[in-house]
Image (tube, rainbow over all chains, first blue to last red; front, side, top):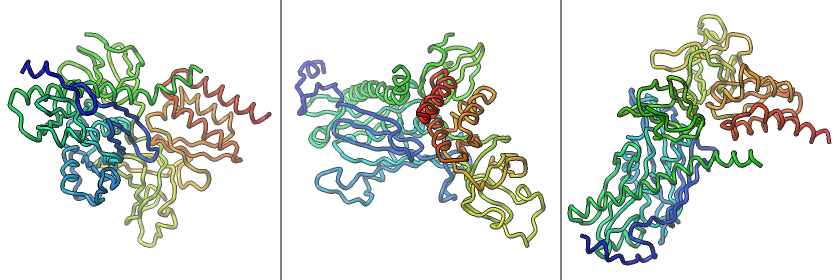
Length: 241
Length: 231
């Protein structure tokens, strides 16, 4: 294992094995949503709007003791090449569910019985790891909506390509690589809320991958905090002028 | 046994506010002996309590709150009113006309769908649905003016200490302003200019509610606007 670590090839886009793609997060971008966020994770561009807590429709699906978190993952037809059908696919439905499972542990759903919290994630441009980008942006949007949260959820993938463990896979690495492990993580509570794996990894490499992804999550967490605080920081600067 | 932030610093959910024994106030929770924030806001350490003044939060209806809402539906003997809470509120007919329900009352003649009302939350029912009343001074159907919105958690800043902020805005603009605890504000001025000033002040409070010395700054802002107008 130590041999593999020493032999660090540069990746196809020139990154180091444990380097994230350039990340940009902005909160409160949509005036008509209760909370919103925009994220650029490499060439991924995702816009997330959060509505609620609001009355649940249809009412029969509401839960008497807690709110329902509803997530929708949608890829714009122009987000990938070639054009993609705008109809929700099996993959879209699955990622919507995965997003919900990743976010649910962080939200105090029991504070709002019988109501719904809606999270709409729109992929404007896709470049591998859209589910992690969606989770990162959705967390920021939920905080921006003033929904009580236990912690922020940061999400990042790690994987293996050319026998080298790498962080934050892009589209090419995702498709050509040997394995892909997306992880969502609550840094302050030290809890994993999403763990998936595509491909095959030996047990020791899998554990290394998860730890690598958590390292990435911690970096993303700092960016999320910064993005949330920036919205209020700007007003501070105006004040000084 | 210590505070981890300075008083009134900006915190986000998951930030550890305190380690050790202390009472937990608004927008905080405790696990594993630590106190965490649940909303973005300003942390407030008291002698024996830690709390967060939320910068973003929805409206949490409590009985006694004055609210401004829209009638969205009419049912038998009650109106359904949207007050921006997690559930819509009920306005029962006896709480609107001070008389028991009779089948010959035509409800849309009293309040129709789309009407705006200033109402008071008098109670919560057993499912915590707010019960409204429009009996009382200053309550009832809105016939003039328009509403603007402010984040509900910033309403206390708009009112100020003992109403200092809102009284100043009333005096300086000459507008008639009704503040709903749910973040809707009813403005009615004698002319459009007054109303534009009132809106710009509310927008300023929305942006700068978290910075101290707000009342003085708004006062200065109002004076500057007036000087500009005179010139």
